Amino acid sequence: MTASTPSARVLDHPAVEDLELTGVLFALSDPARLELVRQLAAQGPLTVAQCHIIDPDVPKSTFSHHLKTLREAGIVRNEPAGRQRTITLRRADLEARFPGLLASVGAAGA
Image (cartoon, rainbow, N blue to C red; front, top):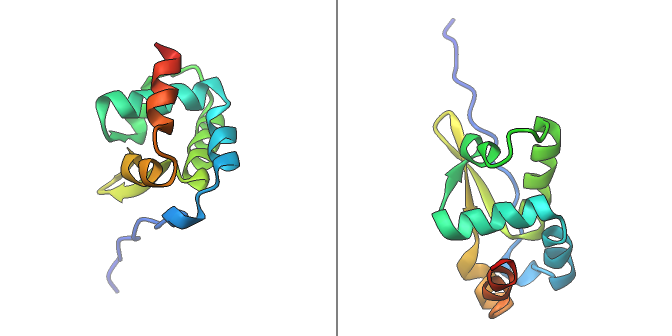
């Protein structure tokens, strides 16, 4: 009998046409999630471990909840990358659905 390597769980991401402004704005209303989006906009894709370093005092369960909220709102993609997961800002999708939103969010923090 051979041991099989478990495959990474593929998470659901909403289609561009299913993104709702109220859901996106709700997800961005939390300061920690907003800061994570700003970091992704500035630095590009990050692993989950790199994202958690942004605020290491946040409990893992809270951080996981933030990532889930951002993913379900359609703001980020959370995809397997080897033994890690990569978090990517869905910049093109958000711009197509809500032109100028990310630029406004970024400018608001400046």
